Image 1 (cartoon, rainbow, N blue to C red):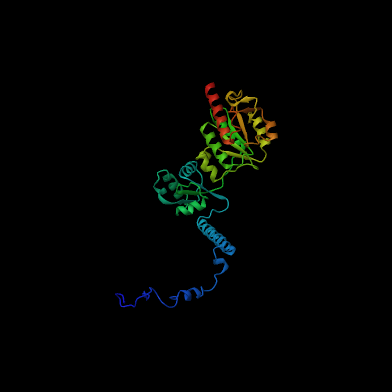
Image 2 (cartoon, rainbow, N blue to C red):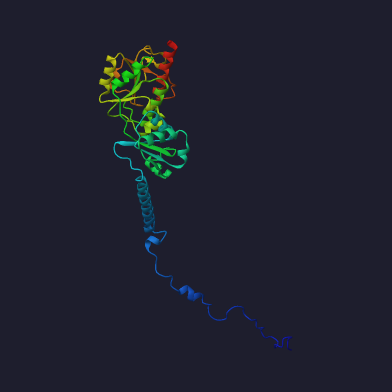
Length: 328
């Protein structure tokens, strides 16, 4: 008996298969195809040569950046024997102090600042060129300093003589006050001492030729122009200079921990004083300490080991100024 589809009874029904009936459809052929040449070792991410290549490229880029920086810095070349004073306040104070300008550099909107008017007039009168530069040029020339778009090129600072400090003190109404720095090598401290001294009536600052910070652009900047008002004398031998001060009637007061007096109750506050500050940590050198008439200290909390040289000097100058004002 036949079924509905006409197949004999007991026969298998044929079902059509889906997909190709022969071959792999090209799958195996693609699998056997070559993948091209093997990449170089330096192009294989997991190879040591690849990492070395990356490091080399980083170094080359850094070298190129440094070369570009040097090229830009060369736009403003400061000749030997000169330095840059930068920042609007510093420039204005330097000009007001009568400093000689050899060149002036302006960037951005600094020319619109009223404080720069005097600087323009002085530079023009002196025949100094006023150059318009990019801010990036000033960034490189000042080593990233806060120049505010203005800088002047000036001759290196001309130091005063010790006798000049005596003369300036004699012209003042109050007893003389000179600040001496012993082995203070940070120009930021020198600038801060000048600023404090200008605020509280110091007649000058005395520094040794060796092992001491010298006057530079940083000192001009930190002093906020006080360098233009307070003379700085530099002597080859600080001990000999202090002995010379003694001959002129000055008491040498060393500022150091463990002193016999405090700066608040200094017995010689009404007398001419040379206040000597040593480096933070090491303090006064032996010979300088032996030259002092009085060793005074600043009362501080036991939790604080020591004070920064500039901070300690500022406090001591203030205490002396207060004692003198109360004695009047």
